[in-house]
Length: 104
Image (cartoon, rainbow, N blue to C red; front, side, top):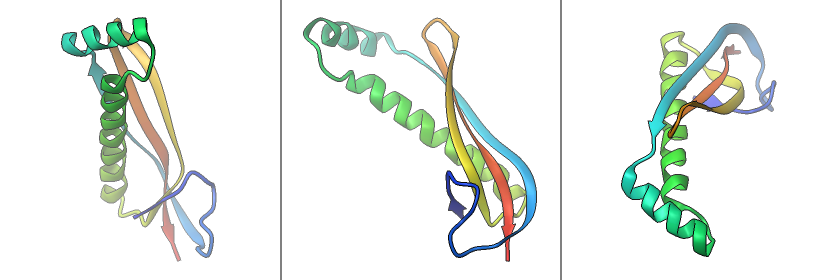
């Protein structure tokens, strides 16, 4: 399935808009990761444990969005966006959303 963050797909014609598709996941921090993050906060540098956690959450949200698009028999998802929000202390939601379309 084609996924783009633009409204059009180069070389393709959109013949039908099927509607909004989305996928989300909520991830909570882990105490072990918090300890390592605290140490990195003191000495500086990338907090790799959180980077990995958010990256995995983004992939899960994207996978869930694609599952919705497949249920609609979409050929592509255009205008893909990601958003992140804190839902409670220590937990964040990652949301992937876009528009499912049929191509000519």
